Length: 460
Ligand SMILES: Cc1ncc(C[n+]2csc(CCOP(=O)(O)OP(=O)(O)O)c2C)c(N)n1
Ligand SMILES: [Mg+2]
Image (tube, rainbow, N blue to C red; front, side, top):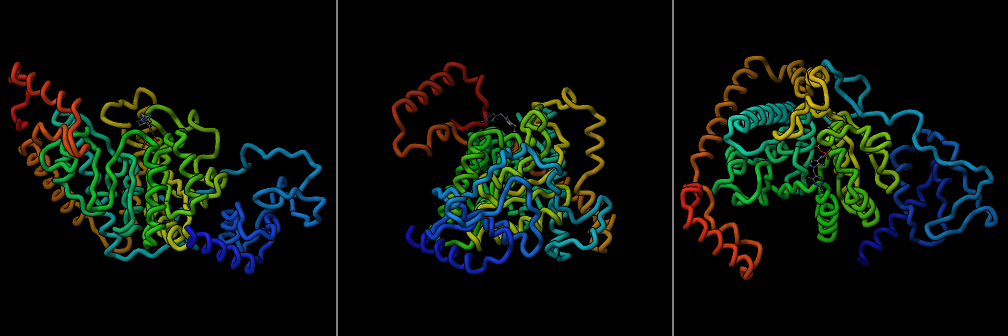
């Protein structure tokens, strides 16, 4: 703790020395070494030396003691003008983009270079994710799986963000990010094993399909209770900070999840504790059947960051280069400056919410098709093909290959044994408590009484 405090003091001291841009007038601090508005310096660092457009509800601080409210957290200017902060700005927050719809680089773009090898690996992983989704979704329709959830429309956010991280960065997912796990090396067989809940599943078949997780790959197990991952991510980031690790935490969530209290608590905690965590919101326009217009009245998510003192950006989630660049930069800032970053990636949810959903009940087929045609994976393909890094022949061969592998994985997973019954009761308590022992006796008695009603592939 002492180390962080002294670090913060040093940073604030250095910062005061470097103040050069007009914005600094807005938050002249008292002589105390510690400021609660530390986070506002982010704006200076990002926007200087560009001109900061003054709005009409902030006023410059006059240092005359009679004209400022000297209050914990810093001095606040008085004004005789009664001005309410407007509920929204006149223009919407712009979306960071590098590749246009035809896969051409937008001239003058600022972005991180992507090598041929990296770009091709990213594209291949996006295609793998697409094929995995279509075959597993089909398997659900055939009754071979009990549930499935696709990432259709959000493949680019999955893969481009994963590519911008290192394996040491810790991921706390929501549920629509299997591509991050795929990028990290989770095999098609491991996906199939989890979906079928067989002996090869890391979760020992205890969870419903799509609740993947891998300790080895620094990927926390999916927990569908939305938003719980967010304060947990702050805690994990706090531990990285304590251990002085060169790594950050990345936590994923949807637009709907920001309506949970946990989202707000997490952002606030992260800002105050100054922890290296990237909050990556996938704004896909929907929370199951609830459109964003019924979810919040703000201009999306990114602007909420400033209310908590968190640096934020909105990015085109259908642009792989923009997502990659934004996350690379976010990662660097999060680790180097020990601060949270909020990224709002915009990409429409083209697929149904999950296999239990029929989205044509609340949106038209035309709308879905309109969005599907803007497929982000296709845009990235255009770019790598223009660079001469990929061809139609590569595409044909690769797709056929992966299709074969996914079909084999699902078949092998079906043939594998299920975990033994006893696994239902282990791993939570060191000593199995009496109520669980009683439940185990109960289920074993029931199986003895009606053996035919229990699947024969579950070892007793
Ligand atoms: C705490 C909690 N409340 C409600 C649900 C039911 N639920 C599952 S997914 C979902 C919508 C989440 O939407 P969003 O965060 O936008 O993610 P998306 O599905 O669009 O990727 C809801 C309400 C839940 N799983 N957990
Ligand atoms: Mg959503």
